[in-house]
Length: 292
Image (cartoon, rainbow, N blue to C red; front, side):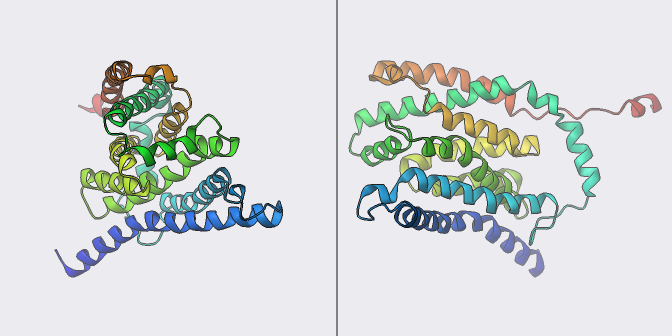
C-alpha cells in the first residue's frame, strides 16, 4: 500500500468519526440554546428546573442534527462532499443499478416486516433489561432515570416528537449515511458497518445503551448497505423509538412475564431479520437472455 493510499484511508476514517465528535458539540450548543430560550424569551427563572427543560433540548439538538448532517449527506449523494469515497462508476449508471436491485415496491411490501421488527426489537431489549435490572438494580439505576426522562408517564410533546421522529432522521444521516460512507472508503463493508455501530453505541454515552445500540446499529448498518439508502433505516429506527411508548407495562411486571416477552419478541425478530437483510437477487436483462 502506497503512502497516498494510507493517507487517504486515514482521512476517510477521520471523517467517519467527525459526525460523532460534532454531535457532542451540537448537544452542548442545544443545552445553552434551550436555557437562553427559556430564560430570555419566556423569562423563566434560570435557577429552576424548567430552565433546562429536556424536551426543548432534544428538540433543538435533533433539529440541528437533521440540518447539519442532512446537508452533509446530500452532498455525499451528489459526490460533492470533502474527501468523499468516490466510485469509478458514473453516477447515473450506479443509480440505475440500485433502482434495479432495490425497486420501491420491494421496500413497500416489507413495511409490515419493518413494523414487526421495530416493535420486536424494542420489546426484546426492554424485556431483557427488565430482567437484568431486577437482578442488578444498582447497575441500572442511572439508566432507569434516563429512560424515565425519555419515555416516562409525564413525557412532554417535545420529547416525544424529538425522540420518535427527529432523532431517527438525524442519527441515520450521521451514522448510516455519513460515517458508514467514509468507513467503507477505508475498510471492508463488514468492518465499516461494525465501526459505525460502535460509534453509534458510544454516541449514547451510557454503558447499557451502548450494548444494545451496538447491536441495533449493526442491523441498521446492514439494512442501509442492502438498501443502498438510509430511508428504510429511518423508518425502522423511528418504529423502534416509537415502540418504547407502546409497550404495556404488564408485559414487564415480573421476571417470568419479561422472560416470556423476550422469547416471543426474539421469535419475531429473527425471521424478520432473515427476510429484511437478505440481499435481493439482481434481475437479469431480458435482452441478454434472448441473445444467448
